Length: 115
Image (cartoon, rainbow, N blue to C red; front, side, top):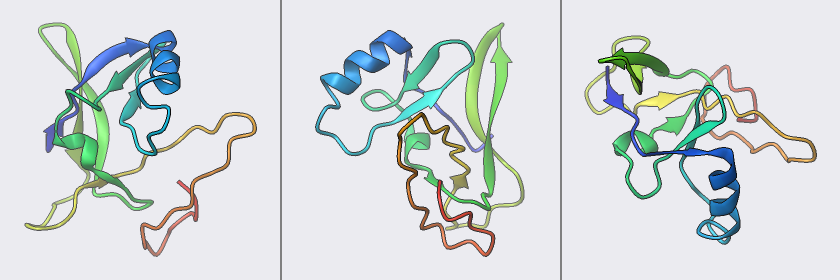
């Protein structure tokens, strides 16, 4: 485990509400989709994991594990991470109808061009 991804667990109705109110004029917010219809909103109460950037060739990945039967989400290293190296993971965005893909600037040799 590199770092646990924490924040408020909210349902999709609350996501929509926040997108139309709190995050209406905000370019960046920190939502991480979970199984079912739930999302972690790390915007106000999240750990430093929310600042991990995307890479098409990441050094870590999101994984789920359980503590006392409670699900947890965290970034786990896919390979050794050097001191001072940025921790990255593949955002694997799912695009909805009529949504424009976000250009990727990860710089990887295997960059897909879009997140």
